[in-house]
Figure 1 (cartoon, rainbow, N blue to C red):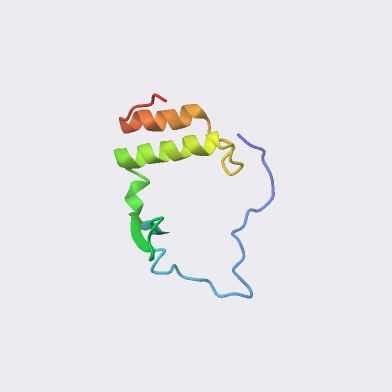
Figure 2 (tube, rainbow, N blue to C red):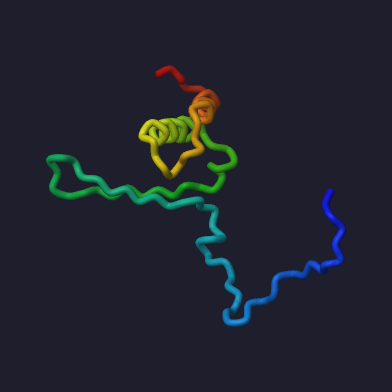
Length: 106
């Protein structure tokens, strides 16, 4: 399907004013994200830091807990009428919960 055209389709021209970049070691790693969470207890003096690397395989085969947490976050975002995710619908978040094996009531 399409239209016949005599136009020549060429590759993108090479960069003229920049040198091509190679992927950084971070881009080549098996990490999807690195999360740093700092919190302090209400009566605490010092904050604590939690660091966690999220592996790239979580995107292709998420655990039950990850699926459930993502569904809860999506549901909260929908309930708070966030403008950052206008396309999130209730059926999507419910299907994530059902797929996680956890209860969908409430």
